[in-house]
Image 1 (cartoon, rainbow, N blue to C red):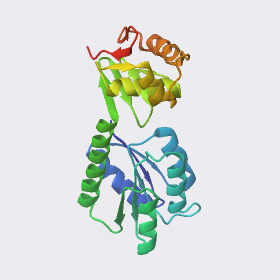
Image 2 (image 1 turned 120 degrees about the vertical axis):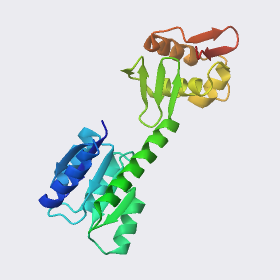
Image 3 (image 1 turned 180 degrees about the vertical axis):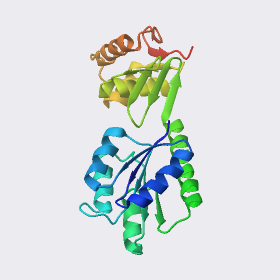
Image 4 (image 1 turned 180 degrees about the horizontal axis):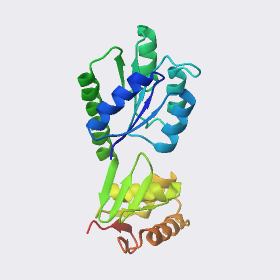
Length: 221
């Protein structure tokens, strides 16, 4: 279920927006404090954060800055009564995906939420590679094998990424050395073979074939 976090210190508005979003079948989390909002956003990983700017304690702009510093993939929509154009521009330049001024029409808010979530879905599809029983999320650097999360080291991720971008193609050792390790030429190193061995163990299948005297091939079926 799509998860949305609302950070706003106005209880009536918070309740109103929450009910409207839940009617659209979203799972909604709420908080009235900037620090709690940062904690919830980073721990719950919502699909969208709706953030007020003018709050007691930590200002919403500081919350946005903290979230972007920790995770640029978080999608934050600003919902605020501020008339400061420079502040709006600053929030968008920091990474906010939208800015809706109060007062607002709830139908417009819902339309903007749907639009931002659709953009995120489309973007994630482009960033996700699928080959056989493997699903690789490039942004999150997350590999699913038969639906199960499987940890990868940096080199394992880069090696598998190259293979999944070229399914059924034979990738030479030199090509992999250059793409993954940045080596121009080193006929004595076996780092590719060692890393392929670790990947095979984690994939729990024979998807990666050895092409003798050439390199490796990731089978799509």
